[in-house]
Amino acid sequence: MMRKISSLLIRSRFFILAFGAIISIADADPLETDRPDATESSSVVGMNVVQLETGISTIEENSDTSWEVFGTLVRYGLSDNLEARFVWDGYIDEGSGGLSGIGDSEIGFKYYIQPEEGFSPETALIFHTSVPIGKDGLTSDAFDPSFLFSFSHTLSETLSLGYNLGASLESGIDAFGDRTTLASVDYSLAYGIGLTERVGAYIEIFGSLGLGAPESPGHVDGGFTYLLNGDTQFDLFFGSGINGDAPDWFAGIGFSKRWK
Image 1 (cartoon, rainbow, N blue to C red):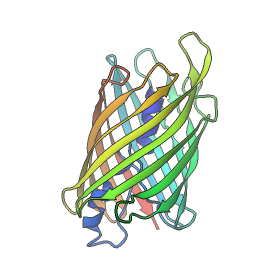
Image 2 (image 1 turned 60 degrees about the vertical axis):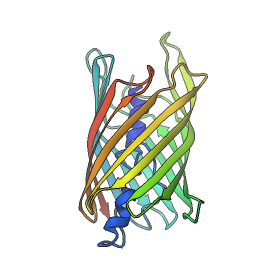
Image 3 (image 1 turned 45 degrees about the vertical axis):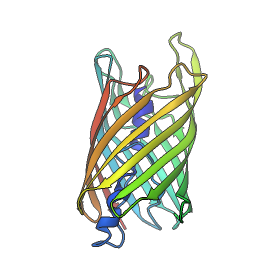
């Protein structure tokens, strides 16, 4: 459960769109990050742009607290419509009685399909595959693929709506010690609000529907970003599970930096 939620949060972003319209008054190229929420953006970073996004998160489940330190996403613009993506789950500490060590990585791309036009949303396609470099017990030991369609609508100068739909595979060891690979449908819906030229907020629901899997966790969360300058952002988020398959609560802080 820790790795599934963590990977969703690492690869996340949406609500910056909501106040991107505000800060664009001062900056024609506003920073748009893929964190801290679980709804992926429908934008790409742009040709030859490098963007680093990292943070620390914690999850509590059944009174046991686990940590992920410096879970990181690096994005590089291959063209105006395509970016390469490199993800590392970070250093994972599963809490009392659990394991600790480095987690897996992911590689992938995001392809910008179309801009927003009328009722037609801005759209992008994201594809990732895991790379099993993590410590034994913290790795999937497999190259698990995932894909996601990302959609967004601009509701006003300060309000945005984003939603994702996709599917993923996750390999692991079940309670009987057998290796399994489970499929799930992944979804999210986020509402973004621009509060000031530097501060944005969001609220969101996200989760997974297991296809033959025993769990279908659902979550609700919210958070804030603070734009230090045109290329630097700080963020925080907090949320909880909304059914028995999800963790009790989770939270985190993060930092993003762009070089162009």
